[in-house]
Length: 303
Image (tube, rainbow, N blue to C red; front, side):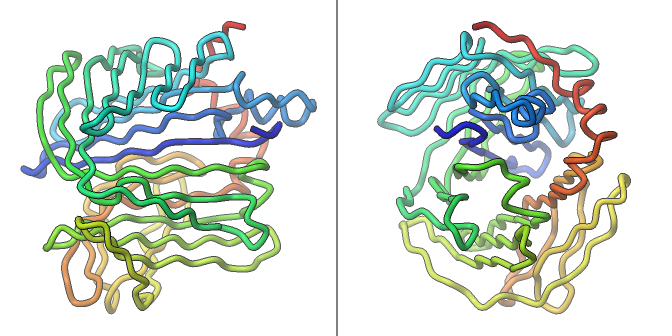
């Protein structure tokens, strides 16, 4: 990987009974890390020295959020395995198994157990998110089933899931000012992904794709753009839906530069349940945000 670059794997899931949710991101070159941002300014930005597992629990359980950054001594990688500190991701014949052992911040509590993702179909195409193709997105398993079995806190559930990956050869904030992203589960099991980004040169990039569980993918007509309520931290957020038919069911994560939400939406005449995120990279770069981040992202580095 190039100095200042990044690679992440993203997984989310919501339970069939509508009571529980989870997101997980494994970072090599942690794009939201204040320590990695400082290393970039100093010219010492080695992605493998800024790695982390971010996991968040939502729904009818005490919310927990963990993102401990670690160094190159805590990273092991090969074709099928990624180990970051005490947690690991492993690809096998049946899909992905995640072994979690993380501690939340700023109030410490353990998140320990297993997540299993079973893809209904695997996608292979990469999509450029910018005109120079320095930032690439791959929807690995747009339609999947997920099993969550956590000993701490005690949680067991199954639900619909999703997994993708992003890779960049430069820092994320060098490529973009802002983006909105969402993935919606449709009544027949399809997944609709809406990706809309404003680049640093103010050009817009939009992807509107529909994936089916058999491995098919097609472009769809972009629904009308719709503003959503501004978050508690005053981050603008927006999506696309039929005639303003999207509503925030729950704000899951609210920070000064990033908001994750659960939406009830309608696309192409069909209702959907969507994970949604809005990201302001201009806010991320500000000094006050950089000073706040270590309270939620402690660093314990080896190597």
